[in-house]
Image (cartoon, rainbow, N blue to C red; front, side, top):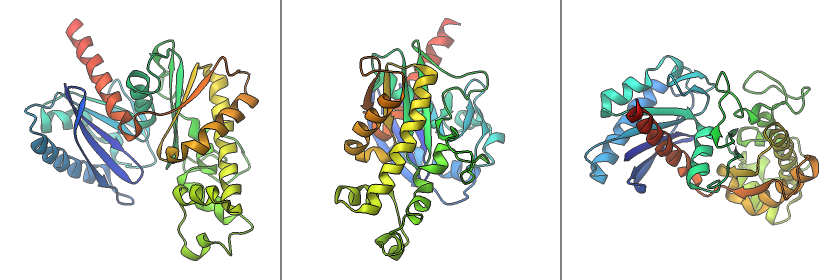
Length: 315
């Protein structure tokens, strides 16, 4: 199959083409603040058509979209999102049919990355796994007894970022207080740094810019403000993952997302903390870094489209 995968990230849209299970081309689009989905969809159409011409494929066999929000993957529509607020009224299957005469699958971004890792990456061979993505937000997906976990309203196993860890804390973008995502994600990192006692004299106060890349680099160099900030995030992430481990009893926890560029620091700390806090032992649950990087949702799209094709052939 020639599959086009679209991954809507917090800052960039990543687009790739899998041609007979090989990546034949990829590109990305920068996302503007408060950009509408309809405007972005037009840009995506142009980029996909350019990529198709460059790779020389004659037919698009399927489109897969990883969307940051609650998604009805049966009727292929967006149910709820804090970004691209016009997306719930958009006809995604019709868009794919009009532009490329191809079927489409749409799935929550973290769940689709989980599916990709389960079938082709670090989770290959596991029957019970969960994946957590750490980045602009915090997302999750769960596989239980070799099946993708959805729940009645497509929320099951998908909302680790909105696990409430401190109901007295500042409001989250979702409207609740003290969600894991509002406490320790890329968009909340600036608040963490600003609360540190050394903030005023730090380089972060002087430049006004803060991101996980620079904070982890400073952590490696022994900067106290970075050490305190990273340790705080690790505590939040570990607490949220412990809750998910208790809820779904996996054999494997896979960690992915942009923050995992510092996996050498994150992996051993989270494994240690989760095993200390949970009712699981090292013999019962293992921890791995994601293998497929930002291509995980592309591979997840391939799996879902192949399953869709097999299901339609049987019917």
